[in-house]
Image (cartoon, rainbow, N blue to C red):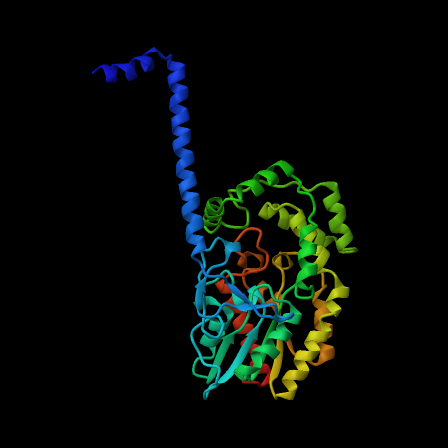
Length: 386
């Protein structure tokens, strides 16, 4: 009884204010302990996810998909599972040796791979579904982060082993820039228009728990006109930068301003993208790997076709700037490589709203891949390749 009194009496002498402060302190410590435990739990679960890539030992490509694993992309909150078969292709198991079915081999980066869709919703699977009964097998050999030189390198290192009848290469808007240059370009970002908010966001997103919650919320709200976002004002310098990027085309400039307002994006998202996307000199350098792929395919009697993927804001209503599309198409025509421009294909659907995750202007949804598969099938039939 004395022991009990010894501990209770000092508490009884404390003022109400002190008791309240102690209560808040204890609650704060408990909350921090719970958050720390959740953070550790999330990081532990992430540590169990197999790595998506393994070194190749080559300059191009520098890595391959990790064979025989089911993995998830860190960049998108780990909410999508990617099944990689024993041959390093995304999708069901198959054999290197070709059976009775003819083969279509898809090459590309994370856009062709289908980084944000389930296995059954990728371009490869949806094209396979459309070809059902036609005696064709579609292989998804795309790998996240590849560029045009990597596509050519993969084709030589692994692609021809599958004896494809048709090779389809998906070109995205950053495929004209090598890995090192692209990383350096991304590091040179414009200062945000709300630096305090940007600094706070960057600090919070060092937490895997915060990242997971963020993507959970983003998947449950419309990326366009989101509720959980703050508008970022355009400064005079932003207006000037956009006008300089699109000389004589005020309609495209106005479309981009509306795009930024609708999505409540910081203007740097577009300004920094344009610096590499509209680099036409670098686009012309893609001619070399494309020519090598064309010649290697012709030598083996394989047909080659290119899909040209747009960036999200190119699908926004009012955007009409023709480059780099025109440069890519001119290159392909001069090389005699048939192609499908996917900008009008995706615009025939929900356009810019095919991109569900905020700040991701690259990876469309399952419905978009359905449109791409239909457009690709139409082109293959038009060419008489099927």
